[in-house]
Length: 335
Image (cartoon, rainbow, N blue to C red; front, side, top):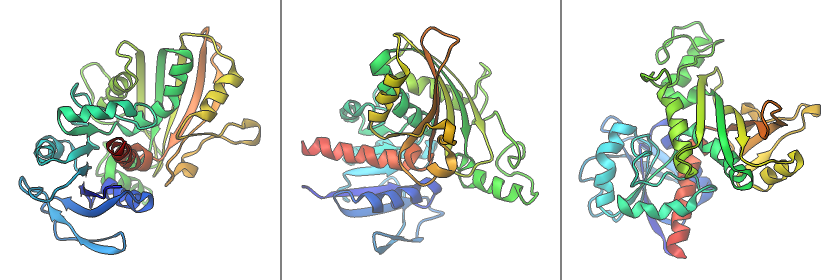
């Protein structure tokens, strides 16, 4: 198998460091890694793969003559907007974790367990988009159900960890528990829930809620699907939890539905409420699967179900999904 040259852009940030951890664990066929960050972080030393890497500054010509095959980006939307096309023009395939490219019709939006067939669309612009963290875990649950029963309507209610707001959000909880005022959030997060993730739109929805709606439709190739969402920041460090209410186009039997989920890739069913077994953020933290439980019929509609799903938002919700895209891309190249 060919050995590839891989760059990590934004290597010093919360997700960037998780990229490095996941890459160490999964051991892609890579001959050389290159770590990049902003001028502020350039020159830092990072331990990785048993070596010490010096972080390079991301500039317009930083990728010239390096022969990079894949560039994993987690450097924010504006950075991606400027640099992703430049890096793609150098010959690399960019896998971008920001929201910048997700809804571009010429850029595939990929969850590898769900729509790996979309990956060849990278040839349009040299970019593959990594979905929103809360969307990713929902897709792993919804895709097998969509295939089995058809989807009529989806209602999301999310309970999202502070790490989803980056290091500053994380520290708002750490410091808030000491009585300090928030620096990232508009209100204290310690002992509180904020129904406010990203900015508010004219519709009354937040941008995070709209992301979930739009990305669900794109990934599942269901542009007319009825979807709504309420996203809430909760005082949890790692792991997003979601209540998902689904109305199906066709009838189902609950035991059969549970069997469909048990066979789905990337998904672990934890559903034994009599013994207090259900997915929890504290157990999902620093793991890669999506966990689903509290599986029960919704008696208010003809064919509906309520689900509770949990995943680590920095791993499966960001770094792991991006690395899995790289793995699948390499598999497709080698096929």
